[in-house]
Length: 202
Image 1: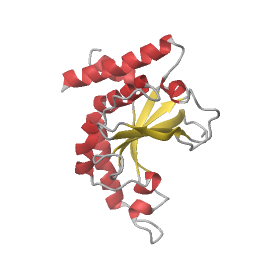
Image 2: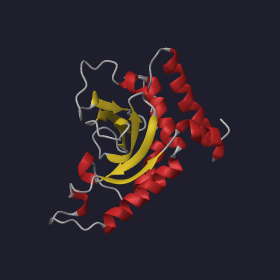
Image 3: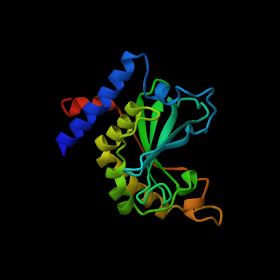
Image 4: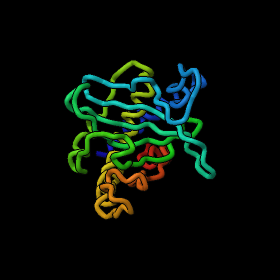
C-alpha cells in the first residue's frame, strides 16, 4: 500500500515539476486556452472524459472569500458504464491561485446533480479515476489521478463521513437532505502534497 502511495506521490510531484519548468502549474495549464475566467464556469468546456476508464472531471473557480486561499476546485467523477451511463461524484480537489493542492472535500448531491451512490459503492469506483488522456493536458490528467490514488484512504474516510452527515442532517425546509441547499460541503480535509510525499520518503 505504501509503495503504491509513494508512486502516486512521485507522479504528482513529477507533473508539477515538469509544468514548473515551463513556468506553469496545474491551474494555469487547465485554464491555458480560456479567453476569460468566470466563476462557476466549467473548464474545459464539455469536461474531460476518458472513455477507457470512465473518469471525468472539470474545474471551476468560485468568488473570492476572505480568509480562503482556494481559487477553485476540480470535481472528479466516474461514469462506470461509459459516456451515456450514470455519473457519480468521487471527490473535489481544491487548489490555490498557484495550483497548489489545499484541500479535498465531498459535496451534497444537489451541488453536482450526479446519480447518487452510497458510500461503499462510491468508494469502489475510486480506482477507475485514472486518466490516460492527452487533452486538455496529459500532465493535469495524471496529476489528478495521482492525487486521488495518493489520498485514497483519506477520500474513503471523507465519503463515509459524507453519508453520516447526510443521515444526521435535518433540513429546515421540507426538502430531502440531499436536496437541501443549506448543506453544500459534507466533509473536507486540508492537505499538503509535499508534506505527504515527505512522510512517505519521496
